[in-house]
Amino acid sequence: MSAAGAPSAERAYRCPVCGQLVAARIASGDACPHCAAPARVRSLPVLLQQHLADQPPEALREALPALCFAPLGSEREILHKRFAHLTAVTLYGDYGADVARGVDGRDLSRFADGAFSGHVSIALFDYFTEQEQALGEAWRVLAQGGVFATLILDARVRDDAAPPQVVKKIEKRPGYYDYWPDGVDLLSVGVGQHWLVRAIQAAGFVEARHIAIPDPISGYVSHWFVGRKPEPGRLARAIAGFKARLKPQSRRKAPERIAAVANCTLCGAALKASDRRDDCPSCRQPARTRGMPLVWSRIARKGARFAKPLLGFALSGAERPFLAPYFPSVVSASLYGDYGTGHITGVDVRDLSRFEDAAFSGVFSILLFDYFAEHEQALAEVARVLEPGGLFVMAMNPGRVSEGAEPPAIIKTIQSRPGYFDYVPPETPLSSVHVGGEWFAAAMERAGFAVRRFTVADALAPETTPWFVGVKR
Image 1: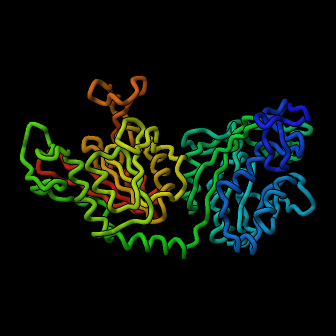
Image 2 (image 1 turned 135 degrees about the vertical axis):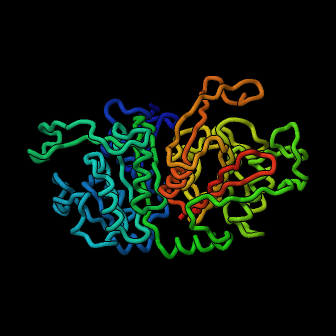
Image 3 (image 1 turned 90 degrees about the vertical axis):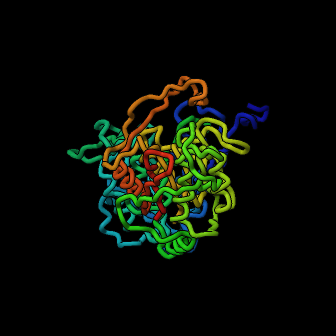
């Protein structure tokens, strides 16, 4: 404490609800000593000001109210700074005379379609397993451009893709859920964060994501899950502009076979067998990389240039020069290894939280999904960071893809050695993963992509290389 009795500048935090300085650590509980707002409520202004600064559009939030579930007084004050009007509701409990009771988030039939500019709740989805049903209702009652945001308590969020499950039944007692009716089970429900993000996407929301907001004075982490109901006109314009740069998409489900060519697509040299397996005898690029221009020529128009950067994983010396002319810039990234100047190491495609939503026009990789089994988690992240109409292009090792519907499975663990994956930390297991092409294409569709598949033959390689292309809807 300073001589004046206030927290020092180095050990103080200004409560985002009341604006008062608070010591860096609260002695008991996590409530602000000035306004009594708990950490989860203190995360709400952070969410609105930093992560949803432009949502929903001003004209929409002036015209339509936000639907707010069981709001505390401090929550209302925060929300009124963003929304001109609030419609406050609850299933049980007394939250004020103006709060409509008996409103179940799983059944909002009393409200018309498109009635609200926002659907906001703190600790609502924690108490029922029918979360997909509630998301469908949220989608229906939100207007185009409306924002969905719900907070799940920290102890009930798992870092996996498991669906909602009852963790326990809560025993009410005087002063603790005593407003809950007798004979109605009070459930504590846990959910996997990746499952919930995908469920928000499946309900029709765009920019669906999980936002973890740590509280600096208590250490508590507030887990917000958000999405936006798209405005069809805006979305259609974005996709139309992007598709003007693309060639028409094939609707066929089976992979389109691309025949082998006699010369290297990268350097133009004749492809002749050598002692370097399937590498070009001139530029030394492998068959999988030589397939890149053949696939690209079938999806992008000649001279096309996209509006936003490309996120490229572990780009080789040949891949980056080929792709760079199509994008204003290239963000080169990988989990391990050094791929040149400006490269970012430590980027896991399963967690792209360092990148904003819709930050890229393209995501590209060769031999990336071959080394982990959490494909759906990664596809959800790829979809999130792509703009509407964004292009995802990916190739896998032929030996790791079949034509079936088998989900990703680890077939062995790769041991690094000098000159062979020696950039992977020795204590880190590296998996070799097999997946069915039909399964992967279906997973891309579930993540929100229109899918096109190719198999690329090569004059020197005995097997065709599988390629997957997706355009974000």
